[in-house]
Image (cartoon, rainbow, N blue to C red; front, side):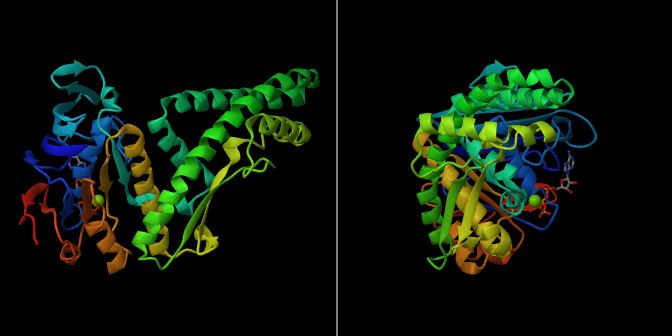
Length: 373
Ligand SMILES: Nc1ncnc2c1ncn2[C@@H]1O[C@H](COP(=O)(O)OP(=O)(O)OP(=O)(O)O)[C@@H](O)[C@H]1O
Ligand SMILES: [Mg+2]
């Protein structure tokens, strides 16, 4: 997958215009608040997802009114294609290869990208839900049926929790709990199974990318960690379902007291160790950043393997806190990928051996000397 040309009109602070990036690394640099993240966001919106900054669609057009329009020429499925995204009256619609679609999300699956932005550091710094969301989000992209499974599980969990709360007022309802226990154990085992398989595939890729970033100085390990007392190493679904059920029965009384299901995939986590110790508790800023990058790049690699298309890599403000060796990895060693990387410091781009650079100045994009070497 490759962006061939991006044109923006009336979008955020960007001056109307277009960029024609290269196949490899494209560095977008400039002082703060010039529009670098806005440019990455313009590309990201073509994935059909919401703004990675959590903005509302109505905030995307240039302040002062009017509608915004983005046009992307891209190469995918062995042909050149075009997508247009219009943001009109706070709503998105799209046109794919001349065919009008009602929504912006109609583009999901047509254009794939993986984004790293500083908020993604929360993946390490915050609690388990971020890490679960990372696994689930990645899985949903390569296996849409997982999204359906997860939503049925979550609905059953809500229903079981509602029942737990009711039981404290109407104890006779406890009889009906076993139906929900069975349902939760079955669906929950499937959810854990899918996540386990994904983490198993992801793990060696993360290890190898992290080795590259740290120039073999540090070793990362990732492992799925379940709230159930099961042996994840010798996982066998029918046995695990029985274990899940037993655990639900064991914790039933306390679950009724708290009105919440204390065990299951909704309480699981992804353990991340660096040189054998917890990255969250002990890792430096640069190490935590490197780890998120390794996770994101590994996600991109598994996505390429399953879809046959390498996603576009968007790296927003990734360079700060990274030493020169690590910066060199991002600038010069992400082979076979189209990368858009933003940074503030002009010195960073001196490390670039090949690629294209764009300077952003008050929303205006200037293409600078091509293909150094
Ligand atoms: N809808 C909009 N209309 C006009 N200007 C906007 C709009 N949305 C954001 N901006 C402005 O765009 C400017 C650039 O934002 P952006 O986040 O892209 O900067 P940046 O170059 O990534 O800066 P930094 O290096 O600080 O991350 C900000 O000053 C912001 O106020
Ligand atoms: Mg920015």
